[in-house]
Image 1 (tube, helix red, strand yellow):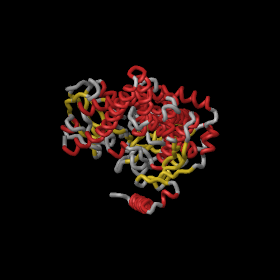
Image 2 (image 1 turned 180 degrees about the vertical axis):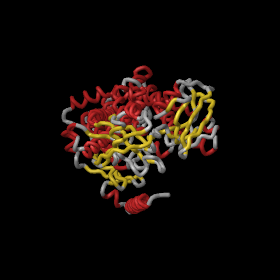
Image 3 (image 1 turned 45 degrees about the vertical axis):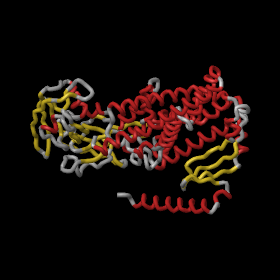
Image 4 (image 1 turned 30 degrees about the vertical axis):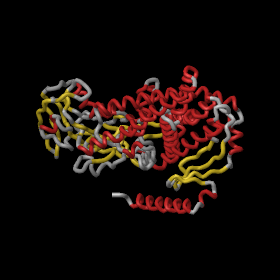
Amino acid sequence: MISPNWMIGIGIFLVYWLAVAILKSRKKLERYNITSYGPILLIRTERGLNFLERVAKNKVFWRRLADSGVPAVFAGMAFMFILIVITDFVLFTNPPPPSELTNPKNALLIPGLNDWIPLEWGIIGLLVTLVVHEFSHGILCRVEGVRVKSMGVILALVPIGGFAEPDEEELMDREKTKRIQRIRIFSAGVISNFIVALFAFALFFYLIGFLSPTVTVLGVYQDSPAFGVIEEMSIVKEINGIKVVYPQDVDRAIKSDKLRITVEKNGETKTIELENLAGPRIVGLIEGYPAKEVGMKEGMIIYSVNGIRTYSISSFFKVMKETKPDEIVDVVVLYNDEFQHFKLKLGKHPAANTGFMGVSVEDQISGMRIAYSSLILDWLRSIPSQLSSPRGWLTMISMPINFRGFGEESSAFFIPENFWKDKGETLFYILNLLYWVGWINFYVGLFNCLPAIPLDGGRVLHETLSSILTRRFGERGEEMSLAAGRLLAFIVFSSLLLSILIPNLQGLTGG
């Protein structure tokens, strides 16, 4: 069911598109130097060219910056092409099922359409990214003496980017513009995106150091000891006199029959005593594994395994880590205020040589669904130290899948400290701005590194290959470079298309 707001938005956009089509048919757009591509308008102006000229004045600085950044373009190119090859191998040997990851709309960097990119922050991040990218090309054009015909705005009802339009004839004139100059110009957008991403993420990772984690009540189950007593989005401050911030604090505090819990919400603090019914709550059962086969259900609380009390997910995992595949275990669960006993012959864990019940669980304490923001903070803070390996760069690419920024209720999960103690809203706003500007610049920069014309990486690679091959083979070298470019473009774009089609066609055919 499409929401009314989406219906209104779609209606407004269709009216706008119709107006663009009518104006184009009546030649009104050409009169004002506007070009349309469907609903997208390129509004050109010569205003700002003098500003571009002034910015490009320090030619030595811009050339050195471009020259030092070109290796980063080639590194990004190699990384992305290897990633494409690995993806192809996985697609043809073990195609993944349809999921959020393979949903066509999530392959597009469109805020609001993509499930992982929020509309507001996505638009801001994309706008900054496109302006930085295009104007960097324009600056390097002027540095290298290539005329910029116009500057302008890309409009699709709302501004979605900016551009600097070079004189293509001058740019591609082999006598006027040398290869190294073209390589600098083509690399400029990617290099600038990487620089913006570097500064944005450096500030982001610095500022999250001012956040302290909390133990937060995500919700309360009905007919549980906490129902009607503790509100959702309360912060758990203490359990049995022990201050709790991390999962290990909670594990240490809940090993008793009764729990004395201190919670805080909206500045008000209260202490409640509850019966201790802590334990991992089953929220999912996996087909083909023993838990489902013996009749265990979602909503059951795993009370003990082989007589060992499992107060939390971590204590449950600790017990399971000591088991082996095919081992028979006794499991006691709490369900509808009654204890039930199960005997299970464990399966093999998909990622380890240990026993596996086949359950997905979440932490709960006497009916309170618990979230530990320390887990996401620790993960975020660990990312810079991972960037010395390819795995770290994969983590960066996929960041929004695991973390979509700070939401409206961030104050229930993170407590600003020191200078930011009374400026929480401002801090979360700045963090979101830095996060999305940084990530979208990083992603767009990497994507443009792909060795496929018309992307910047493809044009840089063509100029480089052409330079090498023409020295050895003369004019044939240029033809060989073009042929290699066409082949790489086919591989890249067909791979991107197949990464969407194969999982989803598999889902449609039931394969």
